[in-house]
Image (cartoon, rainbow, N blue to C red):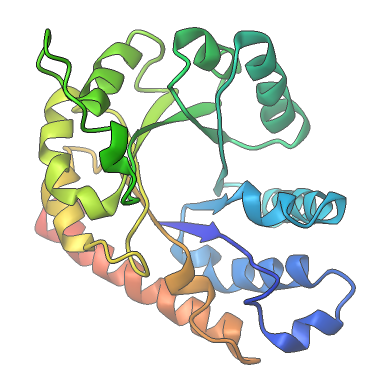
Length: 261
């Protein structure tokens, strides 16, 4: 399980607004309440950048808090970057060298030279957008190449395997497109898949497991709003912990059924 830290100043419990750093205070309590149930956290950069420089400070404090207190937990920058090579090089430096993230989400639209700079960092991961969970995914990701017969997201999966390995490249595949996971597994049988969309967006964890598990699990399933906003009261962290445990137990059951535990 991955917990998405999509921390919105307008949605956190009102009593935290009295704090000097309400975003960080919220994140800290959520992290402490859920750390035993998760293997990764995924801050969405938009929620921090929207607050200006103070939001970036809170993001950096959040990353440092996780690294100091839960050093084995994987941290993903949900940034969806991707630009010409020189610019991507600076994005990679920002997330991997300065902010110390373990992985960053990257858009593949501009091709190999926009992705490669992120892959030059050892023991870091690129998480490439392949098939996303939003409605707009149908605008482009399902367009067919008449020559190859591949849909655009299938072309992304096939071409990008020349850019990285199973040890530094994973893919975003939305839980709301769970029926496509079986086809995706035929193209990338051994790569990890980051699967958002479970919970508030309506994705089914059971369908994700049925279609996406490989022989080593190979899935990192994200839940954001369903966990961090389980309560808006003073018991928000306790309820978040309960929600995370519930998801984790469901995952455990599905892994047992697949003989992976």
